[in-house]
Length: 381
Image (cartoon, rainbow, N blue to C red; front, side, top):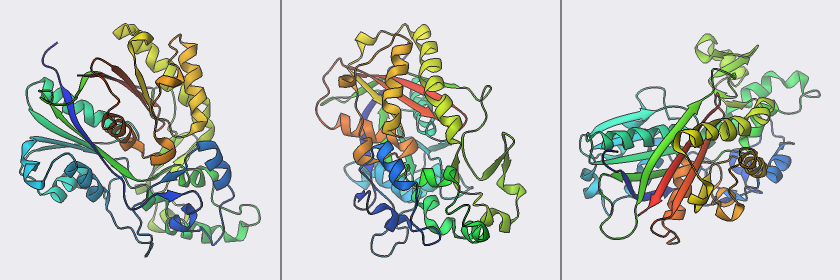
């Protein structure tokens, strides 16, 4: 088995004040000075009541970088900045870092001004926070680290702001009667994603006072061999294949909003739950000999309340029913923060004082990028 690895602290950073459904479009801006027709339908379906944006409510300008928000979450793990010398590895992850180069972890380390340490950044969509966690977990297991910090952060509002779509809107102005707003694949995500960061402090020793979460295992699977890309940015999808942003001119990138985040909604609905719950979990059940009775909490990351019943039904389909009373989510109040979501959920649950020693948690994190999924088992000690 080797040594155990424990999550001893969890921290979340949510920028500015909560934004309710009526304030969203004011904060993100109107595309072409027209209200979105899709917004109301999507919000009714996703069940999110409020979320957070790294946008100053007074000026409308972005007032946090992704790296700064991540650094704020990391600082929340420590009593003061002088304690930042306590960790030897920083693993930072984001779907949408502030820049292409250098990597996100370098920028977070630069914000923290903590002493020299190993830094690693993992990439992906919702799953990159889990791959970051697994790197830190394995690093400690291998006796290469004593204390590691993992942080996942998203500033989706920087991509979702109306200013990013104005050139495309102008480009399509002649066909406004036929297409009164941008393609649904882009507008859909404007009302789904929000900003936040979550951090965890991992150690080879459990807390001497209070609770810790022992990481029992982290398993993930990719199904990119079977399915084409579903959620992407910096590319256009043509005949099922992605054409990357470097093949477009600057003018084309603006006119087609190439850098925006897009989702193939039909591909998502047809595959996401079947692949990320059923196909993934039945492999893990066989590998780990799992039993539903062992779990006190199910902590699922899903992007929308629309998927809640579908996830439950998929569990039933593989004879692994986890009743709703075991579920924990804060999607309605914290929003869908992508790779940071699992940390933001665990932070709230861990710090709520409702966990008891010996309880087991099963965490579920799907990714629609090109269909990947992870499950994590944690034990309260």
